[in-house]
Length: 166
Image (cartoon, rainbow, N blue to C red; front, side, top):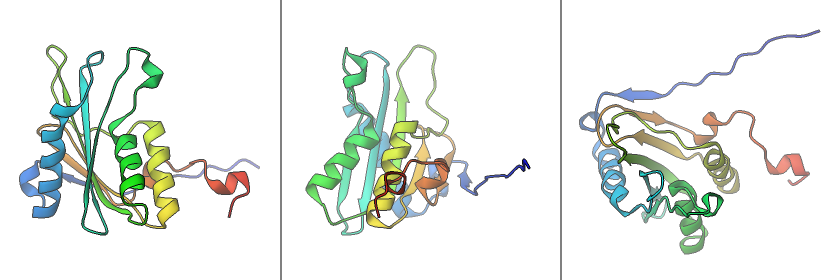
């Protein structure tokens, strides 16, 4: 017998960075500023991610495009790779993601969410460290979304348990 189920989650919405606490505002401002370091000559969609780790360190990443599109890497996965190499025992507490759309007549004033591949990678980080990753999502201006657990964005994720891993 068929039945329907519902999935939903709660997230916080702020009108601007001015409504955030100091720590969140500082992290988001760093992400906004870091968009200038993205390498996005093809899409002109510059993304930056900045995270606070539980050991107090700050890790950053930007998207790095390539003329052969599949070779590029998103800001979130660049950050995750750096974090795992530089601080292998530390987990991400909060991760701010921002973007600057440099295409003609485009604005950067709506929150941006990680792509599906990055959602999967962040979910794996949560699973690996058994700790939620809190997301702060925004553009260069405007609203800010805060999601308490990144895995909420990927309810049917593929996990190690699908492979028989413990």
